[in-house]
Length: 356
Image (cartoon, rainbow, N blue to C red; front, top):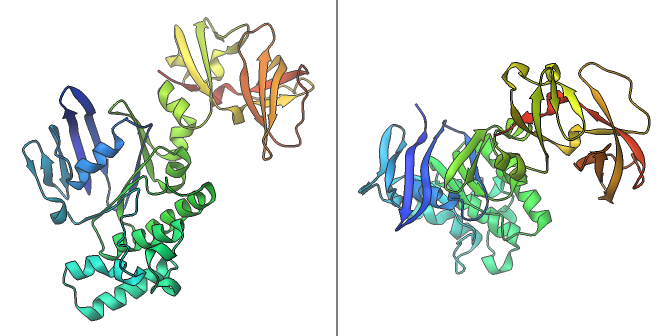
């Protein structure tokens, strides 16, 4: 049985469809991110899970019990869930320790238990030395740790996070996404995380549900989602990619002025007619001399038309010979090629992900 399950869930605001027929099941202790651009329905979905909005269609169940359906909804305070908002929502007039203890006091836990659990969780989030400070005396990252501690200390059945790192600077965001994953690995709380940042989702999640126009386009593990996107939207939203449109003609897949053997692609028997692929820039390699023929590898002549040095890597645009197609290529810092230089593109058709 799933810990949390959405079945055909929809939400309308008048004529506007915010969420459309969303189905998703989370196993106990699983961390799933809802990832997508602004307006795709991810926060609306989270608010329905929390009980802050009622669905207009479908059902939400937890441990097999219906908690949300059209016309009936279990109140948020009876769902045994904790939610962390973008604004942290910690009490400015309470110390760190008082903020963390608040949920336990509302639940009327014994004082000795409250003290023990607060001390334990402050140690886990590395905030014990700041237990007597007020939120105004904390950095953004420290306030976020307080919000996490307050949410986790009550031992919720489900933890909900709504873009919790969007107010932090880039370095703090990177630090806190690893911290969120570390806390999940320690407590194994079933978690739904909303974000528009694909790096956050990739670092924190067991699975990612990519949302677009109120629907889930694909649900998969981060690595599978990146390597094998199923749609053009997912391929473009999860990292950078090259889109290649081609046509299957006999035993060749023909692109713009170059062709690759059909037999070298994944599941070649499924390829027919017009086809489209996503090819990641990291999957293409550049050479000054034609590379030796290898198993499953093809070489295409081309020319560098643009480049940018980004410190950790070079970002090249390379145009295959006689083609109008520019392929983005990521190369290591020492792999230096000049604009207009003739090069060979090493392509592995097994790295081409067929998309709809």
